[in-house]
Length: 305
Ligand code: DHB
Image (cartoon, protein in one colour):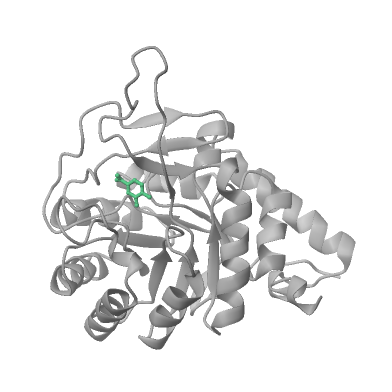
């Protein structure tokens, strides 16, 4: 049987179901192309806002052994400036780019989404992890009515698929998943980072300048997997898995839990860009060994039991 890794997620044709996740290596057209050339099926940009942001002072990231905690403060050059990078990446050959966007209001999300659509992005991913009220530190993505409002407003403004990235920092992820789906989101990405902290025992101080940050990497894999499992049972739109995927077995586990594709971020730092070929190679062999003709045949299979 011919095994094919090609798949489609919300109308987006992918050569394989792996994606570079937001926040890592997505800060220029050339780095996006490098990751594409390393074998990713799509690449997600660093989160873009309407205006440029410097981000927080260092340290912004700490390796805690089981993963990374980061709090960068959404540093980015602004969507208008970054549009040039998307154009550069697009002009040098085939590539599938998903632009991660954020804003403080639905209107700000729309402005950014329109800019990235015009510059050639194939889809947008809504990063709802930014504070809804400056300084209060609560994430927009924790409130179903805010999520609904943002998704609805962005959906009206752009033609490309809109993915909603879900925060795990909430008691029931199904509520937010349904809010996104009901508002017309073309898919959800589960999950963003898990709120966490690291403290230096000698100085007694929190290590990150911003004190709290988001945990990614192997430590959050079982949490992300549970979120994908619950999200995919609660809606019919595709779920993209994200959180601690490091090897092909992790990718298969996420497909079985209900993910149609997987995003890889921290593992690029742990294992290098070869991780995309490792995952797609292992996945292809698994499909052949198990007699599956396509990725889609595996998606959500664990729900049968
Ligand atoms: C940042 C943004 C995120 O969405 C996240 O999960 C972690 C960190 C940031 O830029 O600070």
